[in-house]
Length: 302
Picture: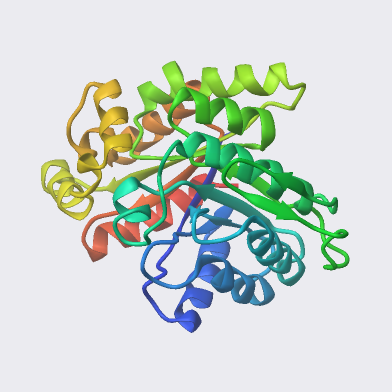
């Protein structure tokens, strides 16, 4: 059965985020996820949430790797593991050239190489091993294991869309987390390439965490217009534009789960058949639609 999670509003206060996470858990969801954009720091937030709200997986969707050295991210992730009782899924990604170069001033040259080197340092440290990376673009060497006792390695998923990134994710991590990627593309592109890489590496079947806008509504046209307005930036980002093109659509609304309970259940079934293992719902709509969607998806989870 596909697992169902939803997003914490990271633009609210920390106290509000804790209350949201408690509501998500009480509603029956399998997981609660925090974005890392321009709001709260996702890992700091989840450390607080994890110390306060039990019995639900907590995930980042996703932490960009460029601003954080692998050792710093490993220490943060293991600290969240300690605070939460080993409930973290660490979702990481490259972000986008316009952000990495235009806002942060880092080079975005050969991002796949950067992620490969990053993971070769990060993953051993999360497992309690030393890192000995002296690569082309990264250096990360530890003199011993990170001293964060009584923690297990968190699950790690990579925001992977291109074939090389999917191979990295399947070979080195537990799977992928996607955004702005339709169900057809999950079935024809994401899940097969990821699964082949995991199988070749002798790893278990990977996690395919799929985040999509969801709205339970009796006015699908209006709801889809709201989704297109809310997520208007994403078709202009090359990696997401490529996924929409692969799906054969142009609008974020066209890959969303919008409509009646029966239509949403059908969409979730299609996602599971395509190889998705988890849905992370970006709940959309007006206040009444959002409340109804939240309650309905919680009833399907677990």
